[in-house]
Image (cartoon, rainbow, N blue to C red; front, side, top):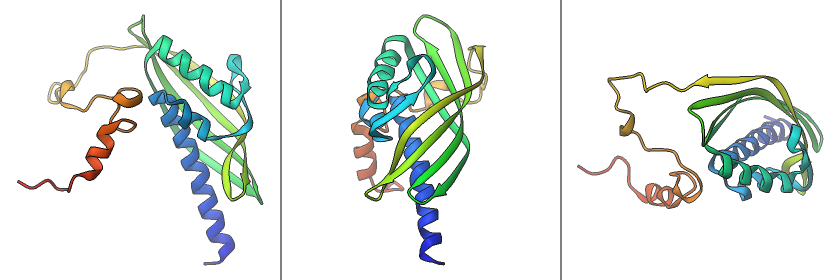
Amino acid sequence: MSAARLDEIASKQEIRDNLLVYCRGIDRCEVDLVRAAFWPDAYDNHGAMAAPAWQFAADIIQSKLANTVLTVHSVTNHLVELDGDLAFSEAIVVTYQKAKDSEDVQFFCGRYVDRVERREGVWRIAYRNLVHDFSGSLDLGQWGLGSVAEDAFVRGARRQDDIVTGPVRTDMMALIYPPPH
């Protein structure tokens, strides 16, 4: 495989990973993870919250902590088109958000349309447009799988209370799998 093809594959993967770090940051309410996806001079045209990206990161995390108890961002159909040190990235995003004062779950389906730039060998978002395709509200009913106890799962959380962004991750990675009997 040629060096150019390897660079193309590695670049696309880095751009995809960067988008997933952004989603993790939003869902875990970790402003530094959100900022890590963007260049310091980037701009995020996020509808009503359009702002310089690093300011957007602080504002969106503050809003999520004040107004929601959970958010989930799922990225699908991610296409990356490279042109040297520039990339055009389009990814479908489906989000679910539960407000603190409601039993309903709000959902949003749209697209992250990004200009991504490689600077000094690193890919990050330079400009984002969030495209709204459709959205709505879902009534959150009771857990429907009686054969699986809902409380049997590790519960998701935010910041240091979550298994991924808190100290449990370090503890988990230090374990030997499978655990001895």
